Length: 132
Image (cartoon, rainbow, N blue to C red):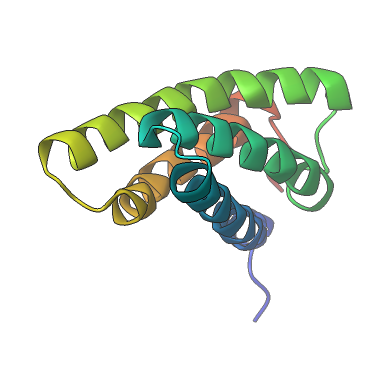
């Protein structure tokens, strides 16, 4: 049985997202434990780096049916990601600062919410790929 194209796209997005998120967590750990940055600032920087890498792979493997130029798609992708990074940083403030959940565990919890947000906003609003 062959999966519909939208399901295949979402699965590819998940694989790319998990991979770039692992890199995000690695950077967060390095920035927090070795460079001694505040966990909220480290979250913002690591998220921004990882989401830029995510765009490169997602553009090629997931959203390749879009008519937007690479530059225009990136601007839209990063605009959506800016909302995602604010959600991530605010989530870290709440989960770590208020509920005292370990910062890496908090980041994992937040990633699920922000990842789904990013996918659907890019799919339906930014890149608008062919849904056949």
